[in-house]
Amino acid sequence: MQGCVHVYTGNGKGKTTAAVGLAVRAAGQGLRVAFVQFLKTGASGEVPALEKLGVTVVSPPAPEKFLWQMDAAEKMACAAGQQAILARAAALMPTTDLLVLDEVICTLEAGLVPRAQLDALLDSRPAALELVLTGRGADAALLARADYATEMRCLAHSFEAGRPACKGIEY
Ligand code: ATP
Ligand code: MG
Image: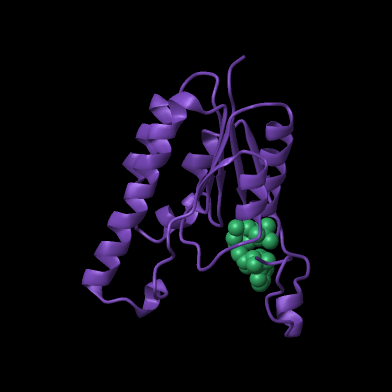
């Protein structure tokens, strides 16, 4: 069957956790699943959980600083690292049924990964691959390539009430 492109975007909570949910479902059906993280700031609970299910997780060390704290040279090194992760993801495609690129949309928005590199991955993907892209700020061109596109719209988030990020909920 022809694989689909799935996009989870928007400002509300639920993009990464929806992708994790899809990965769990696919793994439960015996599909080969790979979950690739971009721009993570620390270990998140889904990493050991997905590994227990036999999912291939690519979870590189997080950048040591936030982007806005980096000078030009540090930002270039960060960009090279994110582009290398995308290259690793592309190399996984031939042996994967469901590939998640978590937060990859944010790397486009931040100017760390050239749009052409993601377009090349989309253009060269195996026909049957299910490809999941998450991150805030998907633009119209990316949405136009999606077969499923879902916007998480924030109606409330506990962060706004001052609750700090909660282990097992936010990460
Ligand atoms: P989750 O990983 O919980 O599914 P997400 O992938 O939709 O969230 P991101 O944009 O990747 O959200 O943000 C990552 C972190 O920011 C998560 O800890 C998430 O709970 C939190 N977050 C998401 N939406 C908001 C918001 N509107 N205000 C504050 N924090 C948010
Ligand atoms: Mg996320």
